[in-house]
Length: 77
Length: 189
Image 1 (cartoon, rainbow over the protein chains, first blue to last red):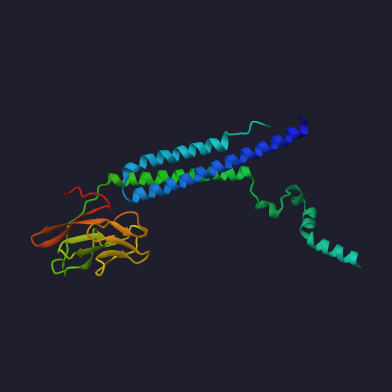
Image 2 (image 1 turned 90 degrees about the vertical axis):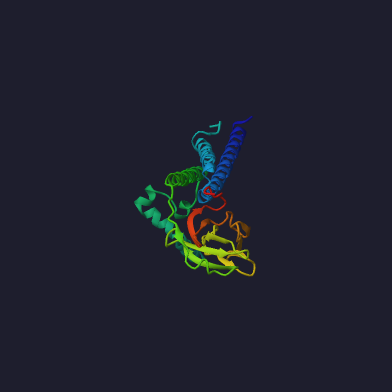
């Protein structure tokens, strides 16, 4: 593989990784938005038992988002 | 002639670039106004990360406030409902409970039983009213309907039943003695 061809493939690979990161972040954000609305509904209905799973689910989404933003890097430089 | 005109047009159109070239600070900080509106993928990722944090804080905040409110057990002062015994069947009466700022609705059904509910719709807090023709509680804002005997949603956007006011008959008078959040069982009975 020539140097130029390698760089071209590498650049395309990075783009794909960034797109995948973005898509995952958007999906996590949408999930968290849904969780927030469910939390508000549970609070208004005084359904306290539902709150713990909702908070834990939001926390898990947030942790995945955090690792996505800070630690998931493309392998190629 | 045409060359001069072209030069003038080009000069006018590139006015901003000329200003930039002349000013020292523009040469040292070479960012165009149009480019400032553009967002890189990395910036957008960071923004989504911040949004995720905001959603988490919102969820935790609501849950914490709810947990705090749950600790404070509300004490309801019994209230005698004046005019309840004179209320005709299939009609309603407005009163305020548990505080003077909380509108409520007392209904006497066709079978003579009394039912009372918080007058605020569980969708967007619009005041509900008793419709005699249909014998339902209706919300005019978004066309929602509730059962008069249970407070359950029949149709419309609300997801939860109306908050029910617990009633008790004491020596021929009707008293309001508590509020049960929509959909929950009354633990007094």
